[in-house]
Image 1 (tube, rainbow, N blue to C red):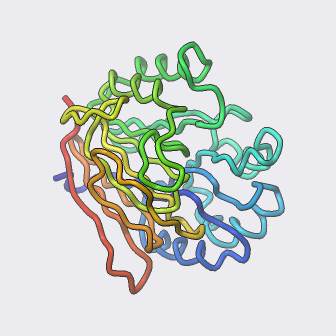
Image 2: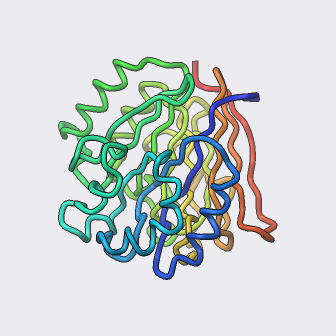
Length: 264
């Protein structure tokens, strides 16, 4: 088990107006210390400056000073996701790019952008290779919006499959996504979806406040699924291991928790 480690906590698919549901999940964050992440679609429907001010800011916005976000497709309904970059400023990485990295405790954390080119030879994947080479750590996690694997209404999305392959080859342990409005945890697998104990574990946590959606066909290696509970994912990051915990909205009975060692 991870023991006393740094905390990374968050979700995606967060704030529509009025931000009734986003207030529910923001209240969960109120009680959890640590760095907050978002896995995109932070402000509905179009990621406008007004929507960030009126929907996101009154809820998750009170945690903005400790938030390291990523953008979703709804951010890009506004040209270049400009209001997203303006709202989060330096916390979102270099303006306009949408991918960056930082450290939490002994962990390397990578926030990526599934709304821009991410294939072989793209600027993002070349940046990622350089970043991983410069931050060789025992434990690492990456997050972005569109999941490579999902049993939700959007299903599998190969946009970030090459990114997954690069992360896997560098020994990254965990990938966190949003986009599908549900919670789903997968067993470790490779970028093709083959179960592999030394692969990457993916958790989809599109439960930040947007209307939840039912699952379609269960994908291979899917271990836990819930589409009726808002909540946030709390990761406790130890020196050589981590624990995950889905923290549900008040009154809900669904929970998911576990631990794993980082890849050698």
